[in-house]
Every structure is written in structure tokens, then in C-alpha cells.
Image (cartoon, rainbow over all chains, first blue to last red; front, side):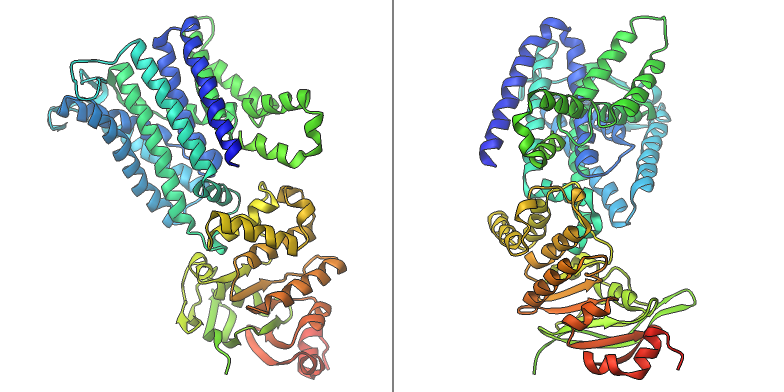
Amino acid sequence: MTRSATRDVIMTLVVSAILIAVMPMLVGTYTLTVLVIYGMLGLSLGLIWGFGGILCFGQAAFFGLGAYIYAISAINIGESTLPMILAVALTAGFALLLGAMMFYGRLTDVYLGVITLVVTLILFKFINTTAGPQYKIGDARLGGFNGIPGFQTLNVPGDPGAYIWGDALFYVCAVALVIVFLLVTWLLRSSFGRIAVGIRENETRMALMGYDVAARKTVLFAIGAGIAGLAGAFFANWAEIVTPTLFSLGQSAEIIIWCIVGGLGTRLGPIVGAAGLAYLKFMLGQQSMIDNTLIMGLVLVIFVLFLPRGLVPAIGSLWQASVGRTARRRPARRMRRARHG
Amino acid sequence: MAETVLETAGLTMRFGGVTASDNVDFKLQSRELRCLIGPNGAGKSTFFKCVTGLLTPSEGHVFMRGQEVTGWHPHQIASLGVGIKTQTPNVMDALSVHENIWLAARRFFDVAEARARADDVIERLALGPIARTDLGQLAHGERQRVELGLVAVADPWLVLLDEPAAGMSATDVDRMTTIIHEMTRSAAVVIVEHDMQFIRSIAETVTVFHQGAVLMEDHVDRVMADETVRRVYLGKNA
């Protein structure tokens, strides 16, 4: 276990170091930064949905909250370190309350989807109505549908004059994604993560074994929201403006599609799905021949029909099928690894 | 005198106009093996669900080791050291046998101890060859056996089994009988069961349910010989 864990960490570090070095030569860092941020957002839903069985239709709500909390506190504080922390902590705190309400209320499946969807809608509608000058938190005007521009963006901790932007912002975001990825890996290998997967598989059984299912789902939900909040804060720094469209239902739906296409129940799948589809959307946005939502819909349909487990598991099985004569003797182990990505 | 580990007083459960459990007084001593029998709809499973916290009784009280647990959640009851197996196999399908049993042990022991105990139970239940196989790929009898393993690994002092022998082959039932006898060395065991052959092979004291209430409670031989029991159970209209 520990040896495979070490190998996992080293593999992750090597692969991500290569990617961070090579990718900027192929794609502009400005685009890459947002792909990395979307990857983090995809990972946040991939964690709670793929490993906790919690299908949240409102992951965009946490993304938007993280961005808004960053923007508002950055205006008031004038330095970026504390706002980054607040964006993660307050978003996770909000999710903790929302999750406790849902999970202790024994809401499951479709009702959970409806509530998270409605919360996203409420935030979207509410922020849109805050155009008037009376809506302000400290020095920050919420700005309604115009959003909040002109806040302090990411700086070197302790030095508000030393901005981190452009290439540097890309490297910060990429390293943050690697760290989050490693933390998620560690979480899933820990007892907490293994128990979460048990709960995904059979809530009743886990309760009958003495696990407080509601408490554990609430905590996992909050961790996922915290990661989405961090992604939101980075997004605010990248875009240098936050607008209510962050909370839109389209954004929420897109995150779900990233997870399905990339491969649910893997750590890498949602990241690959997010970055890949976001890049596709970016490319499609440069032409006017065909509407890009049409293409996105087509991609989803094709994946659901032909690769229902998603891209990463499909590539995994393909690789094992070509390499795997020797591995065939232990089919159970092989399947397990494929599932855990 | 032996300690009373499970007691219900006036336990009543109503679903609308139907009284599924009617004023049941029940007592179980430590390390006792008790079978609950009765025809379909007699209220055995409702009684079972009320005791395990899956249902909250309309009236009456449930005590475990003298502590009132009426209305507790299943996870709180299980945390006391009560092992529960439901009627339909309840396992984690996408996880391996070892992971399933480890999860059950982890609730009460640390990581290393849980692994040692899981290995031990896998050996005792002869699950070694399939320890790395996912539950979803196993046959019904094997899944039942794994679920018993989930219960046994936590080292409970009270074990509640709902129809453990349902749909199992004769060999599986024999193996199950051995495991249950092993459990009674350290725990009181309640078995809700339909299979009369299984009851005859394992039971000592039997409680007979009929129309939600306790009809009689006696040694298995006397229960089997009783005219009233035979009438309600076998539907003989004498």
C-alpha cells in the first residue's frame, strides 16, 4: 500500500512537471490557466460525485461563491492572501450548512439534485438584482449583472504591489491543481476516503455497520465545495472581474458533462474532461460555421452511447488490453485499479 | 442470572390501520440463541426493523443492556456493538470482499487492527480464494457469507439476522450454522427465519409470531409439537 502510494505521488509529480513545462509551448498560458482552473472545478465534482455518490447540480454555485468572496474581500482587504483563504473556507462553510440540512434531512438522489440546482438559481437571481448602490459589503459594491471589476488580484503574499499574473499565474494555478490532486489522492487512500466509497456503494449497510452516513457525506460535500471555491477564486484572478454568469445553470451542467466525458470514479477523468471540453469550446468559439453548444451536445451523446464509463477508464482498459496478457491472471485487482483511476 | 441484553416492552408498530407489531414484550439473555418464526405477515420483520432502528415504533420501548434505544438511528445502535444483517443482501457491490470486511472492522478498530481482523475473518469463513473479488461478481450464497463476515468482524455482543439462510444451498446453510454457533460464544443471536429445516438444526428457544403478537415462546421441540403453532404456521384448519 505505502509503496504504491509513493509510486503514485512520484508518477503524479513527474507527469505534471512535464505537462507544466511542455503545454505552454503548445497553447497560450492565458488559455491554459483557465483550463487548469476548470480542471480543478471538475475534480471538485468528480470527488463528491465519483467517490461519494453525491450528484450535485450546483457545483457552479460554489465556484461562483468562491469568486465573489474573493473579489469582495480583496476589495476590502487590499491584499490577496487572506481573501484566497476566505474564498475556500467560507465556501466550504456554506456547503457544510447546506449539506447538513440536506443529509440530516435524509434527502437523496433527485431531491438533492433539485435543491442544489435551486440554490444555484437563487444565487444567480439574487446577485443579478444587486445593481443598486445600497448593495455593498464594506467597500465592495455587488454590481448586479455588471459584476465586480477592479479588485486586487493575486499578489506575492505580504507584498500587495507584486502582482502574480500572466505566465506566473498559470504556474501558480497549475501547482495548486497538482497539490489539490495529491490531497484528493491522499484523502481517497485514507480511511475517510475508503469509507466514503463504501457509503457511495451502500448507505444502509454502512449505517448498519455503525457509520454516521449523514455526517460523513456532509464533510465530503464541504471538501468538494472548498475545492470549487478555490477554483472560483483563481478564476476571479484570471478574469479580473466576477459576474453572475458564474452561477449560471449552463455552467453547472457543463461541470457534470466534464465528469461524464472524462470518466466518473477516477481522479484524472474530471480534470481531463474539463480541460479537454473547455479547450474544444474555446476552439469552436473561433469559428462561426456551427453553433458550439450543438457540438458539445453531440460529444456528450456520443460518449454516453459509446464510452459510458468515460475517456480515462476507456483508455485505461485499452492500455491494459494491449499490454495486459501477463496481468490477466489477476482480473479482480486490475478492475479495482481501473475504477480508482 | 444472565444479563438481559435485549428487551422490548409493549412494542407496537402501526402502518395506517394495520398493526404490524402488536404489544410485543421480548427478552433476550446474553449469549442466547433465539429464533423468531411465524407465517408471512406475522410481524417478524417489522419487529426486527423496530429493534434495529430502521423503523421507529409507534409505541413501546426498546432496551439494550438496560439502555433505552427507542427511536435511535441504525448507526447509533450498531455503534453500541450490535451486528445487523438485513433480509436482502446488503453489501458494497463494487468493492472487494476484503475491502467490505475491512470497512466493517474499521468502525471499531484502527487501520492495522482492522486489516488483521479482516484477514482473520476471511480465513475463518473460507473466503480466501475470493478475497480480492468484487462482491458484484459473487454468487448469492457467497454474498450472504460475506455479509455474515461483516457482522462477525466487528466483534458484536448482540447479533440480529433477518433470514440468513434464504436462497442458500445445503452446503452454504451448514457452513452458516457453524458460523452462527461460533458467534454465540461471545454474542446473543436473534435469527428471523422461514426455513423450518434450518430452524430445527440450529434453534433452542423459539418465539412464534402470529398477527403481530407473540403466540408462544418455548423450546423448539415443544413449539414444533404444539397444535396451535402447527395450525397458524401450516395453515391447517383443524
